[in-house]
Length: 558
Image (cartoon, rainbow, N blue to C red; front, side, top):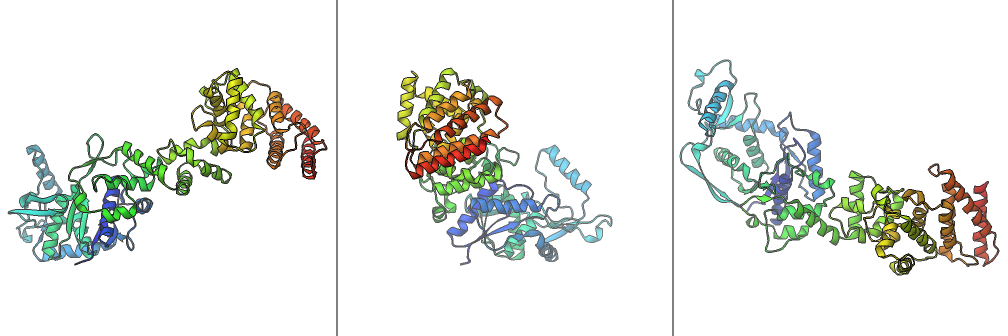
């Protein structure tokens, strides 16, 4: 028994179509299930439309979705001489003939067929004519002598027995008048030379299959087995085309669909195994068979794709998810900065909760990724005087928190709810807007923990950004009171926070985005810190810490 061999044979005339991806997947899975080989053949004989950029894109797309082929890609245009040789052999053996019909004659035949509303079939005018009668001014095409009488039966591995009247298959052209081979000749020769055992392709190729079988039989080649997959339709029931939205693999990659999710969806699009929905690659190979392919067209359902992608986002290893997210951002958004990566990675547990795509995770994590918050102008309007007081009160109390967790933050929020006579939304919403720019997003505790203490203090200090009308002096005083507590012996965490806050104020002094009032407030706050750091209490390490702060502030004030 011959080793199973399958192939995927796209034309590099455009991006890889989603229907082509599924065809490639079925061929690949079947060959792997049968411990055979899977090959890629690039059918690039259409010189006007074929481009190397599309060939490269096809190869990258297959790699992206996890379909690997054996050996190097087979380039059809490099085998044209073999195709021509077979055409001449068919001509010599009487299985083909030269047709001298002019283009005008052919067009007239097509016109008559249209008028009669019947399919066009060449009238076989030159099938039995002698070349002595041939016109001298016309270059002939070579046509294959198709069977005229009886019927042919295709034992299709998916569709079952498919019967056709032989007289409905025209004497099709195998060599054009410029000497170039046509699709059916080239595909037949290539499949034979590549030792294909199984041809698995869309059922729009059935008529081509009957033509190619006749070429095989005329050349006395061993026939491969054929399986024709029903086409993919839109949700409205129309044949999916390249003109449809989200018809290429790139369309899905750009919106953040993950390769494993899309591959799983395409596997289940027209194929089933019991009631199982989710398949690993190994499971896909183990269980795939041609018997599980349905005979009816499948509808491409975007909601099902998103649902499948959401499942993978929720369930794959977060390290793998992070790698895919960073690659996605690099390709389609903006590369995540090095100093933001660790925060994003640690935040994936909640960033992925409401995400269906990698793009959703990117959008949900924008507040972490950006250096400066972009505020929604409608949401800013929600920051009224009461909300501004909530933000100010939180800033003052937040400075005393050493370790960020829900357990340490919840008492502060509860106290603010009580002291400001409000509810959780009345506290959480203003803080969310101040920290992220929007009233929508992750939970407030998740936001604070993911940003870290230094970044939270920085953003809450930037009162002008979210419309806080409190004077900058008042805001900075609240923060100062929270960080520099009188006669307190600071621990290591608090000392680091104090140092980071001083660095932030010093940097802000040179930031041209701040007005004179804000700079004056920053200057006064530095004066207060200088005076505070002159205190001589605590152990040697604490005193050294205050001396260092004093030195930094003095240098800045100079």
